Image (tube, rainbow, N blue to C red):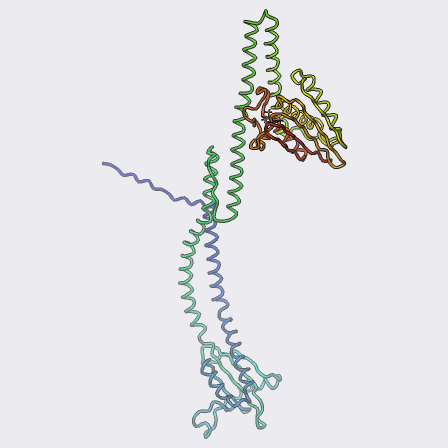
Length: 478
Ligand code: ADP
């Protein structure tokens, strides 16, 4: 017998999720509104109704008092009595009804108000010198209280006349009962609707965030092709822009790290291979032959120089990037640094044919980190030397005033194509096939220059024409 085992899946509600929280807030909000409605209708509705009634009776009473002299006064009374359902009477000073009169009232004794009541309502008007008063009265024989308006109409033929309006507050309890029932039904329906609508609204609001968190998880697992999608509202758009930017930067850094390892291992391997093979050649072939041996040894020395250059550049780079060294600003003469650097090139045998021209105009003092600026000058001159295979004249120009000093390193070498100009400042960027001595470049020189100049806040750049030469410059502010 095959036993069917059913797996009972429990639906787990994440009470910390934004979906649940939004839903909870929406439903609480709906419940709060319903509670307010209930409180209003049970606590305030009766007194609100009474106030409204008093207001209405007072308005009608005052309007009728103002119309007392008009010829259609009686029509107005019956109109109000009919439309508003009020009991309206006009009494004389003895408490007898003057209006409305029933059929035989002219001939029999007119009905009159109990004197005690009359005195209570109207006597106090005179005593307190008021034109009208409002009372809420509960008569013994009636269940519902009444709003009574007692007003003074005026004196005609030596007799005072009074206006009496009675409106029963009767419908209020019955109405409240009906309203209560309706409200109960409305509350149940609207609470049910709120539960459903709030769920969908919350889902819609939280969806972009859930999507974003899923994308972030993918990114964390190493999928760098993900894209954070924009949401339905601007905060999510901002967040997705920021995350996309961060992702791009992260991807770039990872690419750079890969490049760095690939470049460095390549750049280390090539000279090492050359050194090894020349070493072997000396051992096996050129050992006794002094001329050939020296030639091979020169190659080994020059390859060692390349390696030293690379290692130095890498060290500079890591120092600059990790911000280990702070910029120590001091005032110094930039032209001295230039002469100093040129001397270093001149002692190098391979640079002996270069013609260095220095033009100093105006103030050549600047305030900066001397050793770092020396490195900038060195790297720029080094490039000018490297990329000037034929015309070996290199001009170093300084143009200064009391606000700034401009430095230019001008060569008449191979120049840079326009499409390459933007890239040359990046790490390990090397324009393809243009090295006069390809083994020399590390692709780090200009990146180091850029980092140092940006550290100082100095403007920098290059003007170059392919095939004619380049002018690298920076402007040191004081
Ligand atoms: P590299 O060690 O390769 O010279 P850099 O960062 O100093 O690295 O320069 C990056 C690239 O910019 C070089 O490979 C070269 O193609 C180009 N470049 C730099 N300076 C010059 C120059 N003075 N003339 C022509 N091209 C240059």
